[in-house]
Length: 120
Image (cartoon, rainbow, N blue to C red):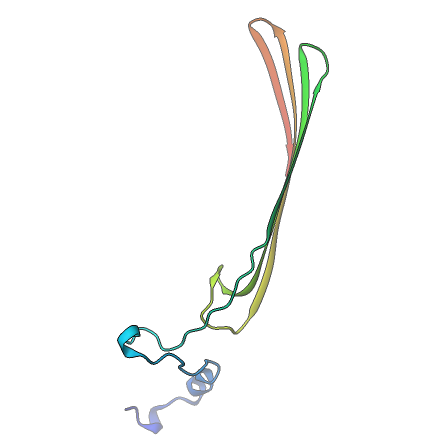
């Protein structure tokens, strides 16, 4: 038991931010934790892909491709992981878009040239 004179008021105020214990079954927890909170973390994702091919001649081909990846994370989380303390609800989005243009040319039966240009 800690004497009342040794309890820091700042620490006591900080403890008031934490929720009180709600899981007290010692036979399950073995004293490892005493508060349990679960919440859904939503992670909707969408991927778009489009590729167009064009034969310029029988020896030259062009293609264009687009890829988009869109992800959102919503919920109570801390450092990217599910939080056991529902203090701050977060939301972040991670859109990614890439485009690529390719040219392939057959110059001779033994020589092929290929070039790529990409954008992020």
